[in-house]
Length: 147
Image 1 (tube, rainbow, N blue to C red):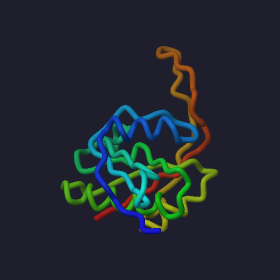
Image 2 (image 1 turned 90 degrees about the vertical axis):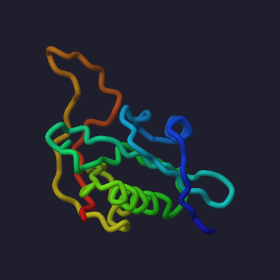
Image 3 (image 1 turned 60 degrees about the horizontal axis):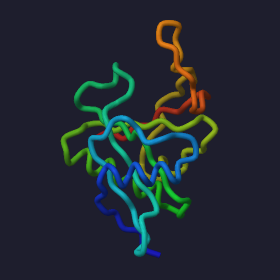
């Protein structure tokens, strides 16, 4: 089976994420995205947006805010690599993403990224900004691809 990168529009990517992502809805931010297909159908999507952490939003850094596949082998690593090529072509010097600490990160490593450090898991809830968490609050790994 040959996996091929293809363009995808925001609404189609978000619909795929809604159907297939294990623990998150589509992200808020969208700068660009792409998909991977197996010759018959889309089997994965990646969404790149601005960094969620304000201190990382320096104008030169973008973030993979969502990557989702249907489980097709090698689709995730192909999407991480494609997202980095596209981000570099747009002038970004750095692309980051987070994975759950419980996830191996094999796809990110296979795409040539490196783990920077772990981030303490926390809730979005604050006394002055009440929130109900519907996502995992465990620790995360921060990964980067740099030029």
